[in-house]
Image (cartoon, helix red, strand yellow):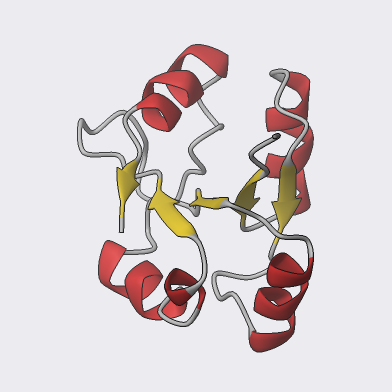
Length: 110
């Protein structure tokens, strides 16, 4: 049984960078909000794990509120820069593959 995981980032630039790092399960919300229609699509795809990797300026409280409905149906994680590796408005992938992998591996369940 394959466990389907999806990584959600804010913009298409981040999708392309992370895809280039070898992660082919990345999509863009095209905003810092996950809307109702996107939640429905994720559930229809039977996604078992959602990893939210928004830019550093999006605080954890906003992400938690954003995925409140989704958490009822699947496991949700957040990529958070707790070690200060990124600039204030940077995406988790902006500093290259090594920093991305550090942040991705230390994701937290929310």
